Image (cartoon, rainbow, N blue to C red; front, side, top):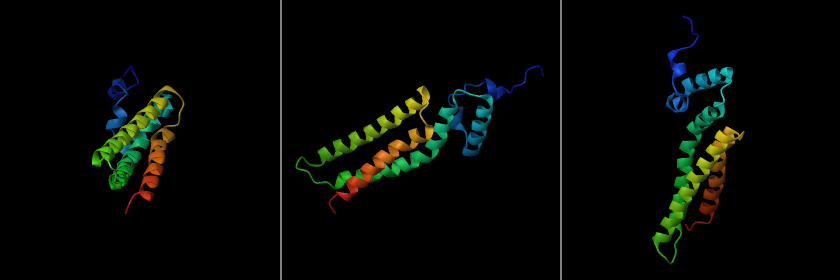
Length: 132
């Protein structure tokens, strides 16, 4: 053929990385690095999130257990509001770090794992101070 590309090269690259299996994603990242793609940090972030998202659900569960064990005068509504606020705050941090990867040279590894480190520390602190 005259042109040296495949039909998959014409597809938009933005969301391809999220639909691939882990092995395909690693191969895709390798190919994109060879091409010199400007979206390589986005693809690396997707790869790191494959491991960090399951751990984040565990950390948020630990926070929920710790928050629900506190007894307050206002009842369970205060604990519920505090827990939901922490969940929204986690999502906010997660999205902010994702945007930092897209718009700057922030490390995709740190963007995926820093919110987990922060909220994991918070979960540990809350569990240590929870009533038994």
